[in-house]
Amino acid sequence: MHHHIPVKTVMKTHFDLVDRLTTVAQALQEMAHEDTKTLIVDKRDEHDEYGMVTMRDIATKVLAANRAPERVNVYEIMTKPVITVHQDMDIRYCARLFERFGLSRAPVLNDSREIIGLVSLTDLVLKGLKAHLQSSS
Image (cartoon, rainbow, N blue to C red; front, side, top):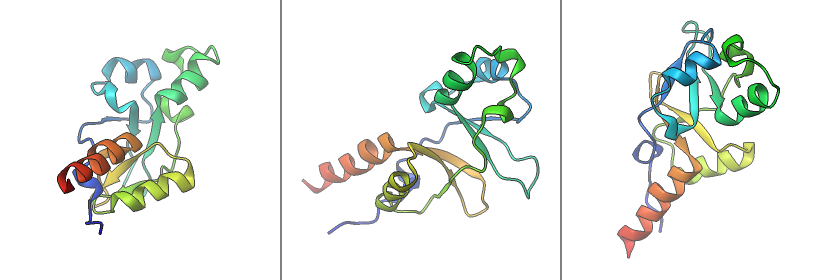
């Protein structure tokens, strides 16, 4: 029998939120949480959606493309809108969503639709499944 493990219990609560007009160079210099491997691009207003830039985006769309990071704004390489998950979603359903859409991480939203964290496949497995297995043995 599986008990409910919500995403909010396994997510990372630290993340980097940047403005869409920030250059890749500025974003990397200001990045405080390198372990998330992700930059969240803030909404312009309440009717807009969040965006996301991963280190893979920067590696393939800036570095490999030989573009100057000080001349590329994050909005040029971001994914938007980004698939988000609710803080109370069960980790099993989050894993299924990731599998269905080929995701490795997603922002976590609260009831007010504000980003409160990031969750990755690693978080789901190591902090969720592994912790559940250890507590049930």
